[in-house]
Length: 104
Image (tube, rainbow, N blue to C red; front, side, top):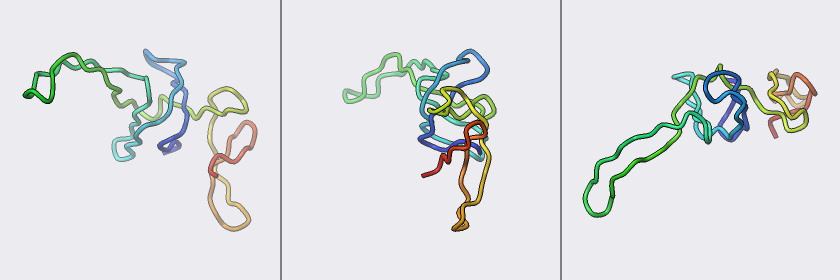
C-alpha cells in the first residue's frame, strides 16, 4: 500500500472528496484505510447495563485505499508516491512532485 498509519491523506473521490485527514488504521489485506473524519457511520447502540449507556454513536468507516492520495505539506496537494533507494541501501518513499523523502 502507498500509505501507512499516521500519514496525512486527501480523499480524491466519493462523498467526502477533498477532505484531508490522518490515517488511523491501514488494512492491507482488505486494501482499505480508516481516515480521521472521513466516511462517518452512525450506529444505534443498545444499552449494555449501567456502565455502557446506549445512544447514537458516530465513528469512521473504512474506505478503499485507491480513493486517497498522500498529502504533501510542501506542495499543499495530493501527490503520487515513488520509491527510491538511499546510499545506505534503505528503501524510502518519495514525493513524485517535489522529490522530498517522506519516510524519516
